[in-house]
Length: 491
Image (cartoon, rainbow, N blue to C red; front, side, top):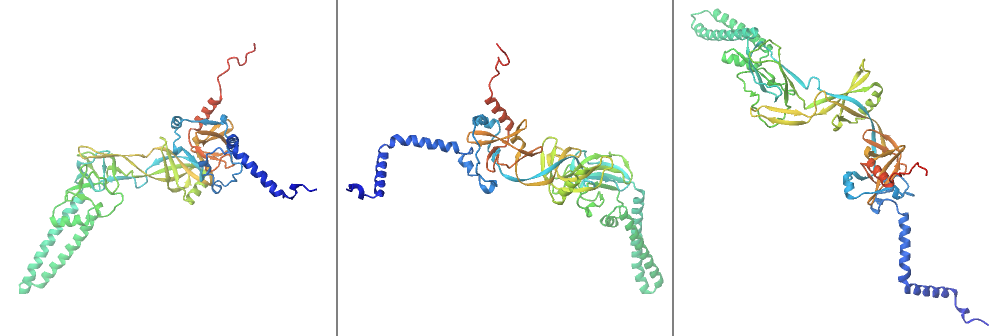
């Protein structure tokens, strides 16, 4: 005899059981759901990476270059430090110093001692008198800043050759005037037949001789330093030039403004120029070698002017480093300079390398272009201008020359890595905590540390870029306790 349920299919039986279970679960929802939800959250928290969800979004596989399988920084209370906002400010951990790790190119550098020097033939300009005379006025003041064309000295000429040449030149011009008047008179007389034409011809020959003599005298005056305009002025006024004005030369221009200045010319007296910064370089009067009333011979140095707007850095590298320096020049890598006060100047061009090794020190010298910066610019009540420059010849410094390039490296500041014995650590931000993570240091210089990209840290991890040593000490103080007074005693 068959059972009444034998005709019911097994599928319908399973469906009925499922409906009964669902109805029972809905009826008892408030009892089992909180327990289940707590268990799920606990399981997820135990498997969550140390970085927050926002930080995890930065762990892109294309940036890290690693499989993110197993990319979990374990959060351990013994290796984690919770910092208050005040503590973070005390450690200087602002947004600028808690940044994601990025892969970047690093250039390994060598450090070379150096000194700031002048540019030969460009920085210093010597002002000398081209003629013998007596200094009647000294307008220059030691230490003052002037521009090209500024009046520096007045000299009363006593140069015998120049005085004699001017006298002969004026005398020849007078004789030429007489000959021209005589020729004009004879031309009228010859027409009337009162005087033979031979006399007129002789006068014309004499005029040509005087013109040739005047031409040679003009050239002699030019050889003494006078310009064509000044010679023409002598010819026009028929007066000897007795006073010479010495003006500051321009380091860049070498045109007609470089002619000898005389009292009839318009010049800018020192101390009474415009106070606005000029377009051309400012020249500082470093040495003043003469005084009023002093007799000076031709070629005597009057003063020394210096243009400090651009200088050179002279570095001395060891002979074995010449290959790396040549590589830096070939690849056009800029260098950096570190001064004694800690200031650093980046992206300086390497100008040239010496073609010989110093025989005594066995070093190779090379030169770096150094643009200068003005730090002081004042004008006193007398209109005299004084300036000061940031870099000065004789300053000692160090030049960092890149000699090798490494791509895709984790580069951190030195203060981002703390060392304890053979271990090295960085601190990764995890919410309000900073987790200590051991790393392998591949290379270290004075400013940077190269951390191995071996999975200890990943690109995108938020890392503290400073105060790592202080954080390590704080972590040790947190985990350590007081000293046991009974340690080492047996009772």
